[in-house]
Length: 183
Image 1 (tube, rainbow, N blue to C red):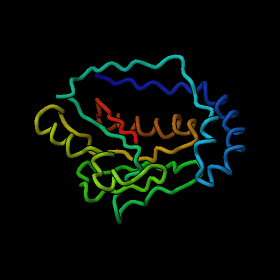
Image 2 (image 1 turned 120 degrees about the horizontal axis):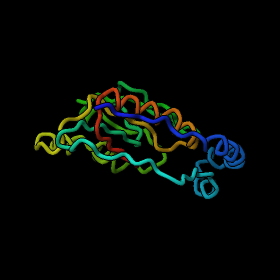
Image 3 (image 1 turned 180 degrees about the vertical axis):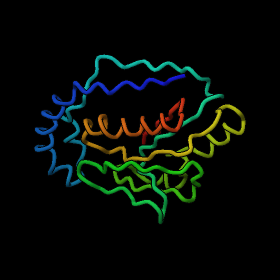
Image 4 (image 1 turned 45 degrees about the horizontal axis):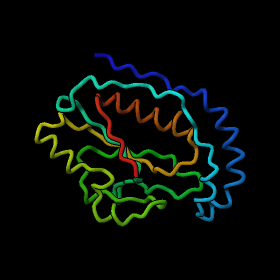
């Protein structure tokens, strides 16, 4: 079966960019000082009138599961940690499907890290999902997983670059179901 991946509807982007430029000029000093509450009260969040429907066509027990974590996970001594920048680090890391919990850590500076550092499965629940594969509740796992930092102020770049890149990679991996793990 051919999986159709429609292009992202980017009609909202120019209006967002105009509002974002004004917001960022006003918010930048507070963001640089790591004071987030006040600036995000006026953030120009995009609003959408419709959400595209994506019907499930393959039972999970016969599908391939891909995972995207927003916990800024990386492999110690292998991958570069995510940078703490005022607009958020745009990098996306690909983690191999056989990555072990002991190899993963986080560099997300915008969330309390205690829970993730105590059990990285909170942010990328591979142990539980691998158990579900063994129990035949999930057909199989994708050969790689994706990690990014959830703190990104440029919603336009996330939608038009980051998300489309990840979606294309998931499609290339034959993923039928995707789990987004927000933190």
